[in-house]
Length: 235
Image 1 (cartoon, rainbow, N blue to C red):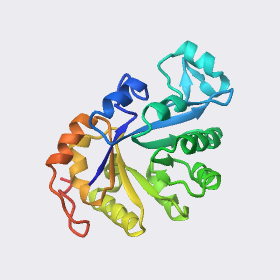
Image 2 (cartoon, one colour):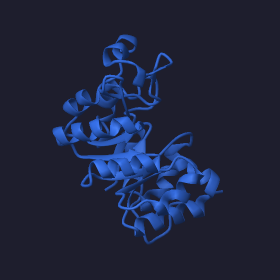
Image 3 (tube, helix red, strand yellow):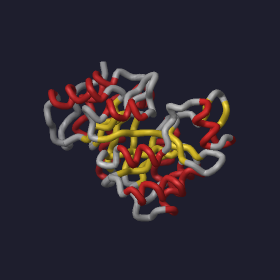
């Protein structure tokens, strides 16, 4: 069974907010979100680490919420959605310790992910027993992958097919699977409803922009063995 995870809850105007997470969990098994630390040491959920053009790292939590009340704290999300699976995407090295501490405190079923090798290693050092994944955000990510040890999962953008090609994409997924890694697909600018079914034989989880539509795709997709071929070819 493929795990369905809401990408920032639901991608769009309300992404990375409590309403987006609530909506996502009507259809999904879990949620994915990005965390940063504020200037006074609180962990907040926001994608780019800014509010009103100002880095949250230079603001207190009170100042952050004064500017944008929709930004949730990690504590609130862990408390309200503690029964859901969570992909905690750590964007800020200063947020490593606080994020790990809170996830352990609430005992949620979670994987940490990061798109920089240094962040991955910091997470592993902070919590050797935690599940830590590496998120590929460009061609260079595939190049540094062999240098990473002890990771739990590989988070691969569907967009990679545009710069490595379909067959190479399948090869990357197969190699990762043979290494024992869990594989999560996520999307940046591709048509996830078209591409996800082609890679399902090699995927453990889908981090979907629109969990409602993706749930229907997953229910209708044929199940195939990972030893077989993917569900289509690149035209």
